[in-house]
Length: 283
Image 1 (cartoon, rainbow, N blue to C red):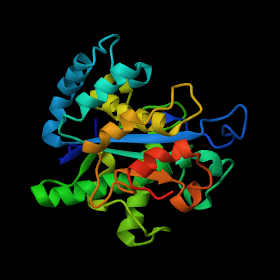
Image 2: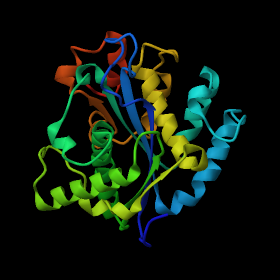
Image 3: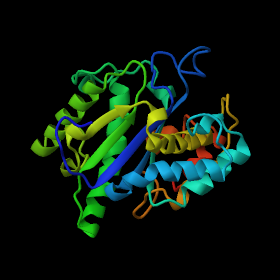
Image 4: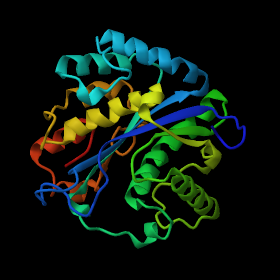
């Protein structure tokens, strides 16, 4: 729970697929980290937070995916995976994803990002990119709906990352935004949406919303990753279109490709490009 009571207007659930390792990256290295790393996010209004458990139960029933204690999208076959996504998009939520092809990041260091104490600066960096889009949506929606712009951020726990450092990173970054001292100015997290006391981490099995975020992260992972072990398939990511956020376009809004398109076009195969082209990227 947060260290102090605080009101919020939105809840953002964040989960991942692949791994953020950069020292060795497949297929450059025979043994190494995954070629792709995706962060998926599902955003609901604060009043719908109480409904997420029931939504997840209904999604599992709709897909006959009731084995085990949790919705585990990555373990489902094609028919159940499709049914899960079709049921998810009926819910009152918004989806976001950041997908990074790490081949050009192999062995990369970011001195500016490394100044912030963290065991995994790349994971924090990807989270920042995701939250830039999430808070943009929440800031606009809060004005439209007259609601509190603050977002409670629920992150899925993963080994090797201390979430106290993630909170410290967000606080440091928020202060940079307020003071106008960020290194990159193309986009920034909307600082009025972030309260560092509203950043929580939990095992995904214990929070239904994190299991829905896993559906988003894994759908785009399957759509981009052609190496396996899961079969490459763009179906599930394409089905998310009705719930993916976008103002004028989905590209660089609800779905973010890293590296940037003018670089990515040289690294991606034709199959890997398809899902991003579907959402408006020119590759």
